[in-house]
Image (cartoon, rainbow, N blue to C red; front, side, top):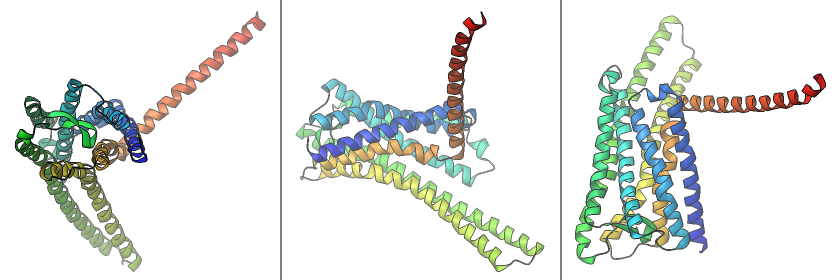
Length: 337
């Protein structure tokens, strides 16, 4: 194994470790806090988190084993099963992110009617649709025997080894990426840009009302007006940064792998194995970044993490104090007798 393979193996191992810990922490927060489970969008987060955990436990170790061993890490049947799961989880993750974008769009555009429009039943139906949508392509690929070990990416994924089906497989792969990656990207761009536009309009209205109120109360000093304008700029930058993070991480993680697979189908030049594995690592890194982008950086999740850590340390202190008390009582009992 050369330095490139060792570096890719280290990147895969680090991605797997971060993804496992971060997604497990999100799941623990959801189980611990009833307030986090109450809103309907918690179903989208739960669906995304469970999918990330399943891919981390099943798909990433096999890819890591293939990179280290430089060969197919499992038998054909197991590889087809993992490829089925890989295709389903990738599509389900993309559609779950699109569902989260739709939810935030509804929360910002219809703030007063949001609770009436977005209910747990509707969220459950949307999650069921993402599952059916994501299951359709790997089921069709399994029926056509288009699942197996993809050597350029060192992973079990969509692939076809029969030259006579090259055109059909290319059309199928194009439809799969168009109805998963491209569809989710269009939904994310449309919803988050609308969210940004509405949020900026709300900020302008709030700023106008604030300035008018201050004019009626006191003479505004220039420094006060500058501070108000500076705060408005910070709010705009913060909103734009969040939306850029949502869309940017999606494109950065999934686009290289999708473009690599499409180029592989349309061009006669083979894809270098190192680039294929690197693009697959970037796709896997979305599972490691999702907990931070969508959950752990929010105030409610940070508060839930603090409560979990506080309870954990409190139990340890009680156990240690109980053990110390029992040993002290054992030492003093013969003296008392």
